[in-house]
Length: 248
Ligand code: HPA
Image (cartoon, rainbow, N blue to C red):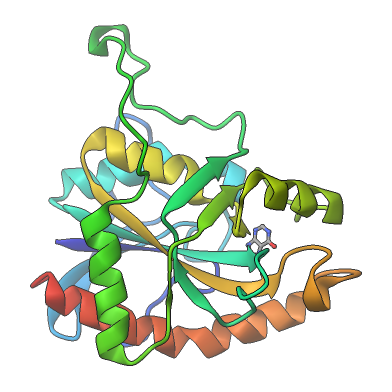
């Protein structure tokens, strides 16, 4: 079964037919939201609202471990993380969709591993390719079938938040090789890998990163909300195709 983790502005997916909600409990506490079981275009999917349904949980306080544990425990095998991001690379303007293929992690102080209990031993998982190649490809194919332009590949920089970056920080991220910047991509991706979930992200560029383009002297929150709203239908169409491809 496919799970969709909805980010800022994407806690609800239009067209999703809710069947039941389930409050999950995990050894790490409660996930961000109840799990919403239902159908998208006739295919079974589970939705999880990363920031809670009222958007009350900031990026650094999300219980990423409980989220991934709960999805794994309810029979989910594939997880598509929706990620609103700021665009650093010139062609990644607001409204552009992209499927990242790499991550640089700048977060700190987050619980970023399941391997904390002594009886689990020491594990160093391979994270060379942080996103599942097949699911990335499936998402790109789904976008093609949906007729939605999408960019294949880019480096996602995960920052700590909740504040946005300074212009100098964005310059540094660019020098590091980052193409987009967001606050929730890690440790979500690594926890998925640790627990054995197939995971990829769909990045929705909702603003130019700090100091770039129309964000030269500041990021306009109103514009972000507008782009989110304009992107919802496009993301919905891609997800409908993706849910179908996996047969749920
Ligand atoms: N920076 C970090 N996270 C974000 C941004 C940004 O510019 N836009 C959306 N999420």
